[in-house]
Length: 270
Image 1 (spheres, rainbow, N blue to C red):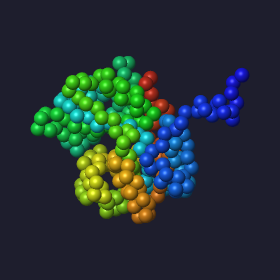
Image 2: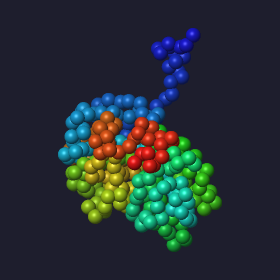
Image 3: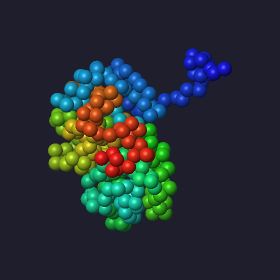
Image 4: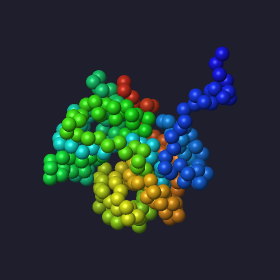
């Protein structure tokens, strides 16, 4: 007979959800939690409507540390990645990024990603970053490792060692700039830079998943926690996955696993 939902056997078989380094901070803000892609994540704080409106009219902050984060280094990096995506990555200049998709041999979408080109060293090695969906992180990593030349390109998985914070909304710069050494206003949409946040190294991109202006920051956990507190103190609204979903829907942005998957081609996805 199958175990009942409340039995010790069924409880022991329930996979343990992962938690981001910001978990204690979101709990302290009385977040309502949910399971998402194997993570225990905040679905809302003060309420979905309030959080949605805050991003559209002012500024909100999201913990998106569950997303996969890969750092690349190697010769002909763009050219090798080019064979796995339909977009022309070779046209990217240092400091530019491209939203694109990883494709399987049938043209199906393995995942939608953002690739950030960081430039070429004197040695001829190119550097880049890639952000992928949390639910497909392992699948994406395996696919990339299977198709990139291991002798010339290295992939460093930063998914659990870095936090990722999104600061989104028309007032994003005014709230974020006091904590960043470099000027943010000159950074164009889908631009990025290696910056200094609260005196520590960080990666900042003018990207997001809300349809609003804003930035996504990759930081060491201790810096991310400190920045989270300082932004809340400055009046930024903490937002959960619920508002992130309504915001991206309103902006007609696809969600992998719901709107697109490995049976969907880029042409079908529009």
